[in-house]
Structures are given as structure tokens and as C-alpha cells.
Image 1 (cartoon, rainbow, N blue to C red):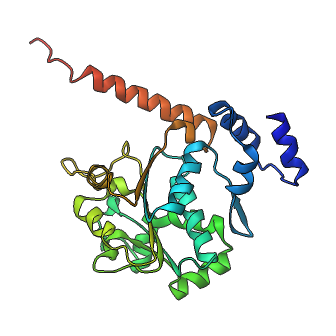
Image 2: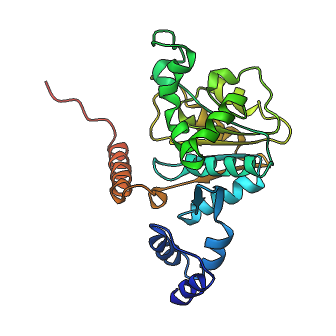
Length: 272
């Protein structure tokens, strides 16, 4: 590993914050990993503002899947880079003119897709539910450039309900928080894909906010389309979490807690 570090430094590569830790984790997961190939070849440069490097083998597999397949479903806990990496790929595709527009969407579950009771115009009503997509976008590109692209419609951010009836050609489409889609919404979204387009669906099936009794469109879609050629399914776990180190421990603790409760089953009624 030391020799590979030295070779990268000799070629002028400058390790960013956390990348030495990433390299150590990669070597721990696979002693035969080629760090040079990993950091040089898999580095994404969506713009002059941002350089993005996958932090785990699953993240690298995710980026590779997006390159090779027209529909990719990324499933895993919060903080694993599902949306961020998809956004980086989308911006890279747009800058390289591989697509002519980016469309970002997510369900507005908290408002039940009925946003009339919120103050303001339509954009102001939906913005709170789309804010995470804007956050990732502004991390990739300069604010002035984003505003121009939004004004021209080159980048569009909208609730999933607004996708109905459309055919999305020559676009990079990201559906975020897909665990909160219904059967109807997911089927509608997956059938919007047009010529020259890619779609990335991201979600965390442990954080479903749908009303009781409603089946998650993401969970159902995994069962329905997983064997279709041209669709790739990538799973993330707590080892892929790239937020604060405590987040990884929290994800694992909740997984253990939920597994223990599931195995225990419902509590027995107390004697009267």
C-alpha cells in the first residue's frame, strides 16, 4: 500500500480530506486493489468546482453501473452517497454533452402530494421537499450557472407527480427517496424513460414514510424488474456511509435493534 501511495504522489495526485482513510478501507476490503486505477480512473470531475472520488467498493460499483446501464437502482441507508454520486454523474454527463438535460424528482410524501395548503406559489410550496436535491446540485456547480440552467429548463427539479404523461428523451433522470413512492408512481416513473436517457432510482427501504398499509413502490420494483437485462441493482450498507463516523455506528445500531425486535416477534399479552 505504501508503494501505491508513493506512486500516486509521484504522479502528482493530491489526496483530499478522508481519502487516505478511504484507501486504507479499500485495501482492507481487497488487498489486491489497485489504488492508482481507483483514484485516477474513477475520479469524477463534474465541474471545476468539484472532484468526486468513490469512497468504497460499492460506490465504485454504483458509478460503473450508471456508466453501463440505462436504469440503476441504488438501495441503502442514509449517508452512503446514493444521491450525491448520481448527481455527480448527471452533471458530468451534462457537461460532456452526453445528455441535454437533468431532471431531479422525489415524492413529496409529507405533503401527501397535495400542496395547496402551503403558503406561496407552486415552486415555494414544493421547495422544502426538494431541498436535498438542490443542496447536492449547488455542491457540484456554481450558483450563477445553476440559476441559468434552471431558467432555461436544462435542469428541472419537480415532485414525481409532475412526471406523469411525459416522455423523457436525452435526459439524466434521478428519482430520490424512492422508498416513498407508491406502486402507481414507481410504475409511471420507470415507463417515462425515452431515447438517449438514463434513470437512477435511490432509496432507503428502512425509512418508509408512506401511510400504513401502502406498499413501497421501491420494494415492489426491486421484485418486479431485478431480472430485466439492462437494469442494475446496487446495494449499500453501513460500510459505505461517508458522513460523520458516528452515522455509520448509528446505522449499524438501528439495524441490530430492528433485527432483534423482528426476531423477538410481538409481545405476549399480559395475564389479567
